[in-house]
Length: 202
Image (tube, rainbow, N blue to C red; front, side, top):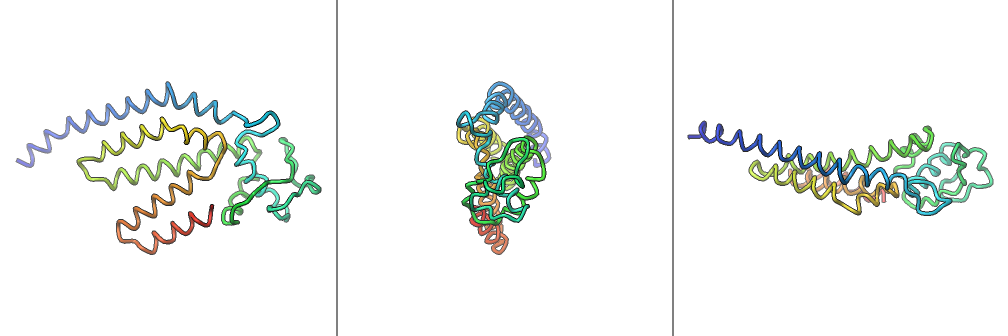
């Protein structure tokens, strides 16, 4: 009976895979990719850079790299901070210093490359969280969870806004999800560490 049931389930699983793949491709190609590309290149003002929140992190990292205080206006030493974008020297960085070493590393790259790296880091964290939530779901509902997660991800207005701004919230939210999953599996210390790290970032 079990062998028969397993054989009967195989076509259903294949159908779920096909439908999920088609759903993702259709939404990505027709909606999400064009919208995300436009948002990624949109400025909040004519003199503002793209991904203005990430720009603050980038300038803070460059200031720290040159031994300046990233929390103050470094316009008077902007020679150390200048690059092809003409950095102002004032990062407006208001978060804890937890991620400043990472921003220092990212600031080694030209801004156009750095903001692409930052986008991939944020989306990668989001996809990792979704993948682990899917794997943690019951076998009977796993594909439903994945479909709903992908649908919410690729039709999300707030996600597109985060891409436009270059915000850090995707990483923070992903760490909170990973903390919850760790706690669910009785890894209390790891859960607490992930949650604490999320709060230290922002």
